Length: 360
Image (cartoon, rainbow, N blue to C red):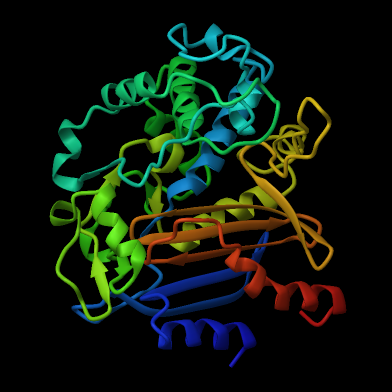
């Protein structure tokens, strides 16, 4: 058994996660894949390639890519004031599009865990009305534009509105037409649960302090079911803000998305704009922020990478690209993730070593 498989198998055995899928790949082939555990504990349904997971904040990388496509089409510029396109923009009129993308606009970031609604209420849900109320309660910026980095989901709600205003399409339609379908992922990636029987049930560890805290953030009788062993399941739901966290898909759909970004002259964006997408932002004082246009940057064993995590009630995932090594990775779990734990640091290191020694 591969060392990575041993690590993940142990996590499953120790009930750290109900299921996990892990992929590492080059731009044109799969290098390694691990899949184990239950997509549904109660019914002992194993996870498999067709199982979908919530991706939450990795959706932001699609939002940023959409904005860069509009830049490429000369429909906007990164230095443009957001207020130029959104006259009702509630913050400092000096804030520009790039500052929203790099989380350097100073826009507040209320806890988004409770920004969800049940599947059965989706048809009647009005996200603009919901977020108008959120913006009204969070009127003050935290600092001047590009003074520093501070993550903001609300900033990406505004970017979603900007995409809709400029393109004339709903956010979902723009992403579907210009990213999902272009990459050939239409049957594996989207904004709704296509087939409940092939969607992983999300879980939270039952005997934890965080499970107690959930009761103060969401209506557990509405959003959660009866315990299944050491886990409490979430009832199926959608997030309120698609442009910061609405994507749902199979792990291999995100693999194919990343492979397209690894390719030179890919289908989704020109190389010049892609280089800009992966350029780290510096604050007005010249400090490195660790954030590009939606992508975090870092290094593992001297190999530069770009990454993003997505987590919320019942699910956690990470995406990563190593352009210098020509590889990428994806991991998806069906248990709650609240923070970016850089889980891929632990897994990818074996394959980075293989690349450096030429044994992989």
